[in-house]
Image: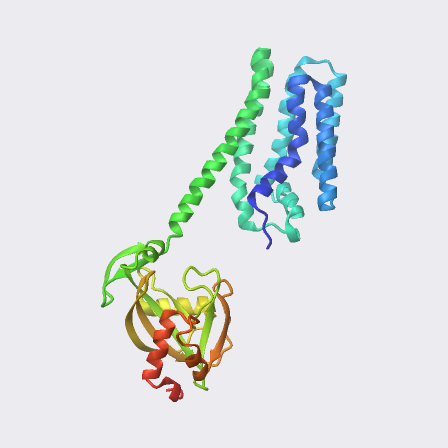
Length: 365
């Protein structure tokens, strides 16, 4: 399902409620007439902008304008001071109904509104769930603020009522956004910590000495770490190779073994082989053979490589995030491409192993 960026979701919600917010601000500072004019102009501009850019009628803006027209008309007709003071609470109560329907009922008007503006007409469940804590926080803050306005209208001075109905509203709104931004930053830091890929640091015999992050290991060629490589031959003794994506950190655009990747910390070699095969080519052999283990050191890293071979005809389901293409290579093609900076260092070494062990002269074991 298509997703909207979170900033776009929040901006769409703010646009939907902007006429009401504009009315409350202008009404508090300049009176009902100024509030009505400001709200109607802002609502009309938003309506025209939405219609022109998205080719749709924003029903939420129409509802806002009708509501404000009714409330503003009553305010202009009535000279009752108590109604004037309770009006901000009434507006917020209507907003609370809207938020409450989204939080506590299946109707969920906010989700329906966002689903209409999302690309393809859908909003991802996970994305909306990330937005709900902010909606819930707004609901309870506005509920408390609405009660404060009612209390101030009956029991406090006009000065205190003016601050609570006006300035305090904007302070609380800013506070909600600040809390949400802090929460997102903390969640992002926690996710980043969880997303660290830990790799074992080993000796030449494969004994685990410690662990380090992938980033640390790739920055220090002295840290030896285990990797797995799976080579796939077909019945014609051709070798399947993958071409590494240009986005890869190491050796972008070079041809490599069919499957290759790190052994993660706490993971066995055969487990890593299964995981990497499924991730990269969407397939795993029912039978594979261990060929060799060797130390490969380059300027960037030091690998303890575990090399396996198997036989299959394909086709394979390539992971396009990591692999740009894949194909079987004949022995003559491999020999012509050797030492031409076409292959990764490990593939160059493994081709030598295959020649030494007569793989290009053998059929399947």
